[in-house]
Amino acid sequence: MQGVDEKRPLHHPLVLQWQEWDSLLRRVKVRSVRRPLLGAAYQGDTEPAFTEEEIRYLGESLPRAFQQVNEQEQVAFALARPSQAGLDQVTSGVWFAGEDRIHLRLANCRIAVTMPSIRKQIWKDPLFAQAGAFYEFVPGDGQSLTPSSRDGGNPFRSDPEELVIEYKLAAGARPDPVSSEPAAQPVPPRSLEEQLSLLKRLREQGLITEEDYRTKKQQLLDRL
Picture 1 (cartoon, helix red, strand yellow):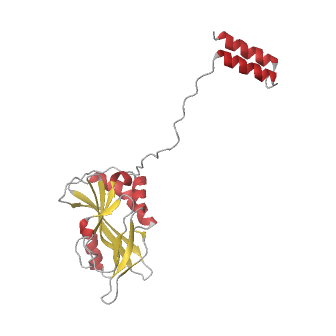
Picture 2 (cartoon, helix red, strand yellow):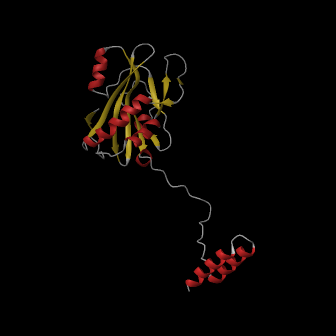
Picture 3 (tube, one colour):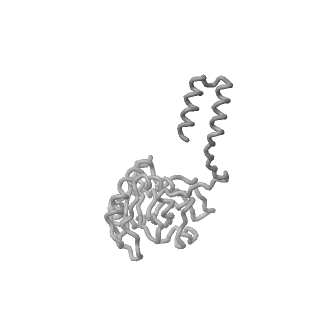
C-alpha cells in the first residue's frame, strides 16, 4: 500500500471498518475479454475480482491506509497470486474517495508477469499497465463505470478501468424495508368493571381457585 498524488479533489481520510471493506470487495466483479486479431471478440464468465486471501489482506490494510493519506493522495496497491502455470498473476491499481463515492482503478488484473523488471515497475507504480490478458469490470447494484471506461474496450487504451461505488452502499448502509402492514395500534387498558367480570368468569370456568379469585379481587379494589 502506498500514496499516489491525485489532482482531483478527494474526500480523505475515509473511515470504513474492515467489515465494510470486506462487503465492498466481495461485490467487485470482473470478466475476461478476448479480442483476437481475426474473429469475433468474446467475454468470459463474471467472477470475483479478488480471492479470499486478497480480500482478507485488503480488508485489513485499506482501513489503515485511508486513515493515513491526505486529500491529494490515492491508495495504491499491487497483489500477486500464483497461477497453475507457475507464473505470478498481478493485480494492481488505486482506490480513492470523492463526492460520496469510492473509486477503484485497475491498471492490471491477473496479468501474468514473466520478467522481474516488469514486476518491479508495477510495484513501483501500480498504475503502470502491462499488456496481456484483459479484464473488465461488471458493475452491480450501486456501481457504475466512468465515461473513460466506456470506450468500447480498446485493448490499447492507456487509462485504467475505473469503477465507481456509491459510498452508502459501500459502507453497508441499506434503506429500511417499508412494510405494507398497518402499524399496530396500542391496546387500551381494561376498566375495573371489565377486570372484575373477567376474574369472575375465570373462577366460574375453574381456571382459578376461590382463594385466587378473592385475592386478585381485593388487589383490584385496593387500587381505587
